[in-house]
Length: 229
Image 1 (cartoon, rainbow, N blue to C red):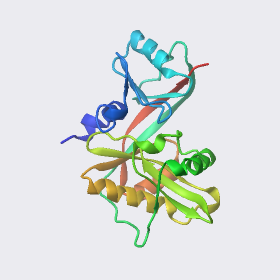
Image 2 (image 1 turned 135 degrees about the horizontal axis):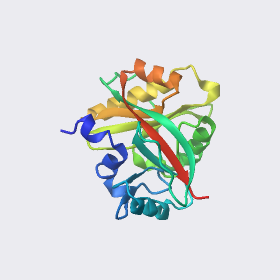
Image 3 (image 1 turned 30 degrees about the vertical axis):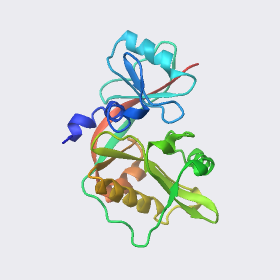
Image 4 (image 1 turned 30 degrees about the horizontal axis):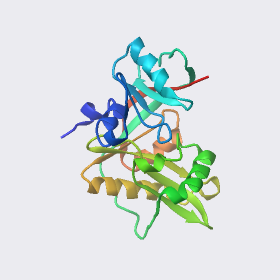
């Protein structure tokens, strides 16, 4: 059975060779998600030829790379470095019980405009027109609008990442985020998998919520986001 050290030290590679292998765009030295689904890519080797191939595969949109915490994301010739930041990876210790009576709405292709509107407003991380194809996305509506959502992103074998957790600013403080996360954790545990997630290391409020839900810090990455000029 996969262990966190085997799998989560390189979550992008583990996902693109695991549960999301059917989505992987493969070069000789680079793996990446389709740009309309997710920006994440992985170099199979840290060489100039791999970085040249990354530039060729980047297209017009952003490309996100995770490096060990001690590594400063290097420049990629032909791409601008748009962001360098520290990202904390957290992993669930125990599954959480669902909120009694909580019945979130499944979200799919028909909900993409509302999902894009909510993520543009709240900025939980990259979310594109086909991001919902990565896994299960669920939400809560209030007054006819999408009030909160959360879903599944990377799928390494034995693990599922919880992502895109966001709540409309007018509707915060009602427990929507916690209820959605608990629901996803329960579904992930029912598949025999463990939940994990990523957040910016300085996001104290989000970390506090995740710790209350049984997540613990596992490791920290350096995030580099690149884009064609």
